[in-house]
Image (cartoon, rainbow, N blue to C red):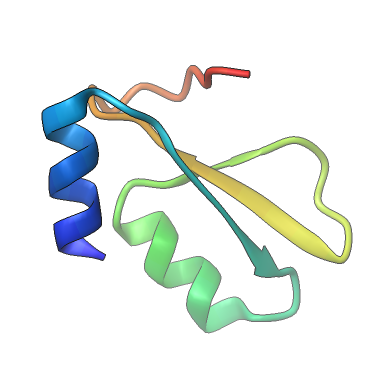
Length: 59
């Protein structure tokens, strides 16, 4: 994940991923890495990570 985040930082791109909403360990990991939830959680929680650390997402 660190190498993907490094490439995203270099290319100024947002990362997005989906995690099963019941997978608490994965959710905690991605939140610690700086991802933030976007949208309304359902079966999967969508998370986004921005280079500048903001919670603003690109649609």
